[in-house]
Amino acid sequence: MATREELLTAFEQFLDDDPAIANDDPQAGLAQLFAELAALKTEVRAEARQFKNALADFGRVLESHERERARHAQALTKASEETLKPVLLELLDLRDRQQAGLKALEKLRPGFFKRLLFKRKRQLYESVHAGQSLTLARFDQMLASHGIQPVAAEGRPFDPNLMRVAEVVQLKKLEDGIVVSQLRQGYLWHGKVLRLAEVKVNKW
Image (cartoon, rainbow, N blue to C red; front, top):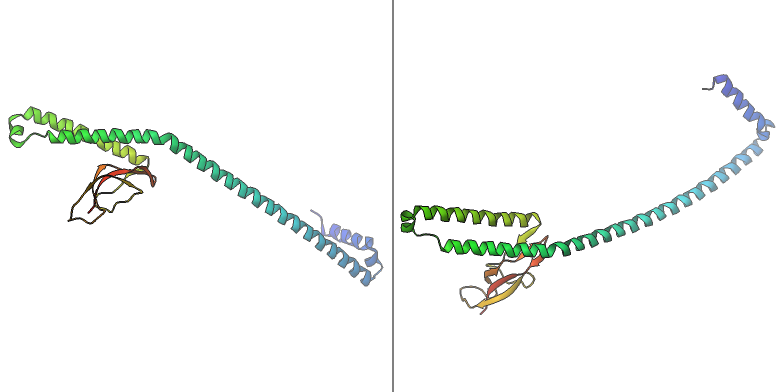
């Protein structure tokens, strides 16, 4: 670190090297100062323009990169959906069969007196029914984990975006266009239609 004496010596040398200051000419010293300020101002403006242009170029590059990233993500999502959709539809068909089998099993439920007389058969029935119910619940959990949700249709107005009319009935106790029941469950996949619900609609 320079000592006080060294700094004073350097400042004196600077004063001796400046002819305007050395000759005690204040006008010449001011003229030189203004000239240096003008040059500095010009340089600052030039650097500001360069910085502004560089910032604009960076903004255009960043915007282009964001558009490309969004396009790539959209293409990847679409490809993923096209690959997964047939598999998910197959899973829905398997679930339909599982549910149909469970309903058929419930129709074979033993009556009260049969349950008393055939305890072993009752136990077998309850075991099979519990297994079928667990399998159906597992299907629903797996579908939900992939963002698949059932369409709520029964008792609601018919929606052509979510439903397809499979049967028409005439019930005066219900309003026109109300869904009486679902013949085939419809599903949404992340808010988009994966499978239309097949419904029975009331039509006067």
